[in-house]
Length: 269
View (cartoon, rainbow, N blue to C red):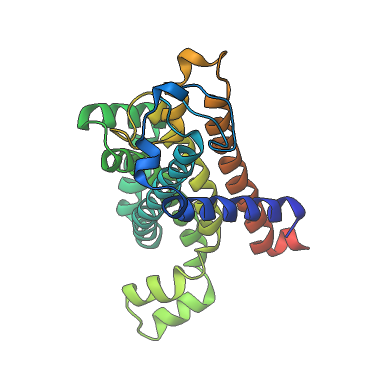
């Protein structure tokens, strides 16, 4: 792997560590405690990243914001990839009218809507909550995985070992899950890494618009939204969560590029 890919892996590992250590280093009370006497305080030894307009510790909220972003990203990728992989396998393997309905109609219907706008409409209709946010991102995210797997299946199903398995009497289910999927999943790993970056960015966007996590639960997008009125007097309130979003997206993108180079034998040569 290249140095940039290793840098991406390090960034992702550090972010995962931050998310895991959040509850260990800071309690929920540290995240929600308000102290107006120290509002908009600059970074000090007590509050390493200062405080916000309500006197809450920015570092503690940043740690918990990492948990929200990575949780949303991981769940969205797992659910979207599972749905998309299943639909793509069925569409690519059986072909015919099944493929025409799925790839010709279903895919185009979902691709006709701008992804973020569709997610905004879904969350606005269902109400702001973490569950609804994840559901909305899964609705717009599964299509990319389905199209990717379908293209791989159309190629793999014509290979000799699949024909031999079919000639030996193997059923469709066995051929799909034992032969086709393992030989089609390679690009899915890369897509999942890049999808994590997209999910984190989409969560931050919706949270900035007030359609993300509800209540006092911190989110990087919500932190930027809450700091709009004090951007010039307390720039650290948007610079810190903004930098975290940038590093997260950059880390997963670099990791995805590295996985692509590592898994593709053509690029290795």
